[in-house]
Image 1 (cartoon, rainbow, N blue to C red):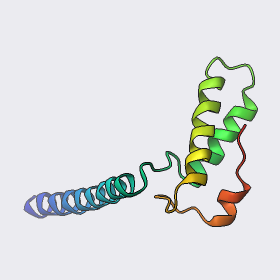
Image 2 (image 1 turned 90 degrees about the vertical axis):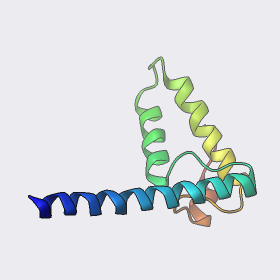
Image 3 (image 1 turned 45 degrees about the horizontal axis):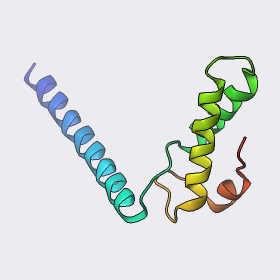
Length: 95
């Protein structure tokens, strides 16, 4: 029982440290650049896919706006938070 409690605490501490270091990096990038992108490459791809597959959805316009905001931000900032490469960013276009 004690080993389970210790294991749980250790896992919690590791997760907390990782989360806090990511948040520190986000805050640093926002301070330096004024903005960070809101989606990872996979999430932005999935958002575009959803937009294309749901042309009549009432939330489509909001999704398009969010997509375009992320594309604009990626083209304006120097250092993305997520793992974007230059070719992925240059291939992006507004909807």
